[in-house]
Image (cartoon, rainbow, N blue to C red; front, side, top):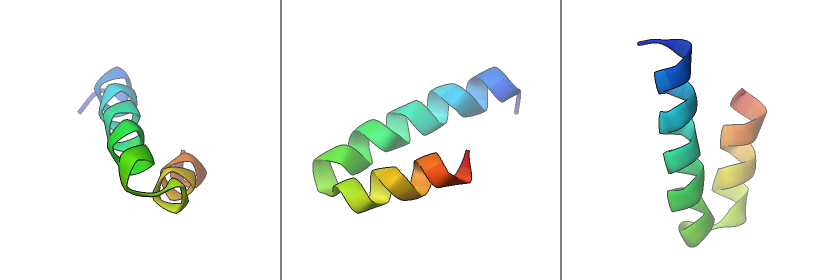
Length: 32
């Protein structure tokens, strides 16, 4: 997977996590 594709996928995951709970979003950001 390319870096760009990974960035897009993470953005989507962060958006979904934001609806479930901010703690999940922070975890995704920390992985970056």
